[in-house]
Image 1 (spheres, one colour):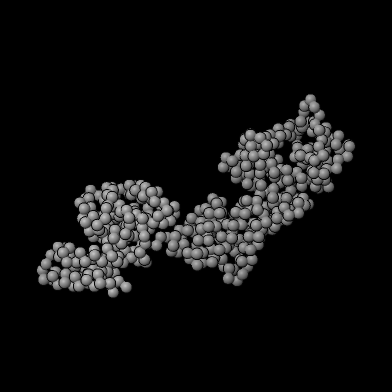
Image 2 (cartoon, one colour; image 1 turned 90 degrees about the vertical axis):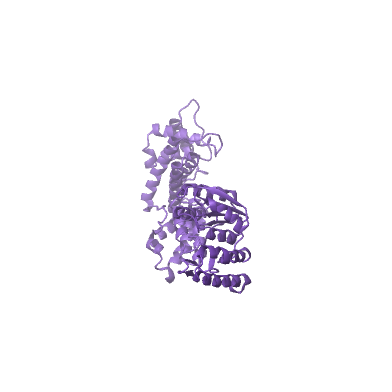
Length: 470
């Protein structure tokens, strides 16, 4: 313990003699520098008291005011290999004294006493120099603006440089009569940052990422919240984020599993008052949608109309999101696949499959004629054994599909060009990037088919993420 250290005992003896000398009429400041300060420096050089424990800092940055003693103790307490001091024109005169008291080289940085922007720049510069090393930011001395700016920078940059720490020198006993801390009661405090206490900041970060649909990042913050706070309620938010992460990745099996686990957890007595239980029925409907999609992918049964609805709706949802981000190639691929799946489901209603349509000679002839109307040219279209997307669309018109039969041939001719261009897309077989107009042509027809399927099935798919409580 510190009280057992010989240096601490010498400080206490010097403090007692100092008080007697001041009481006898001596100059408090001069006597302190002569009688107490050398012993206190000697103690901090070998056994600085640090709370909760001493850390090996690679560098330290200190604000310097007109009372340099606390800064000297902070420099000794951090024990950094490189020491930087933010000073003003007024406090510049104390730099040499800091060098003498601490015995270390100091890199001075002069700033204005209220120039917090300069502090932010210097902190960033230092942290970028040592991104993987522990760095201490000492806010003990300097003007209020300097201390506040350095603390704010430390807690903000902690998000990007996790090893930065904010520290300051405090004391456990203050002598009112002498108007200074009792020698030996000083401590270097390593402040816990907001991420480590209470979880409020991590909750804000998690909520921000969740709102931006960065569910991977949100889930990581929720997991850290459980570890930092011990509050298992955050586990359920993590499960929710993982659910949507899997859903947006088209991993319907994993998304359904996460949804089922979350519903089971919310049904337990311990979580009946959890905020997510306000959305229990909505979560259950989403789980049913995911289960239908999972079953469709597992069985490839196009008769699973709710599964087709779930997958197609998801594809169109993602296509729209990619389009808003300017990612037209991905938007086109998702919209195309949604249209293809919806057309295949409609063909299944007639008992036919695109890969084995079983065309009669009359149907083959009628399909060729319909393709000729949609794709006018010198050569008559060839009907293949396996029907592509455009052939499925034309064949459904031949079979009398009411929705597709109502479409004008001119509109289909424009769509045909877009569908043919799909094979030339960069992520398929070619080097072209689809335009927003082309994507919208495909998505528009897919939305009409989806809306019709919704009416048939009687389900309005809900794909939006459940909102987090504020």
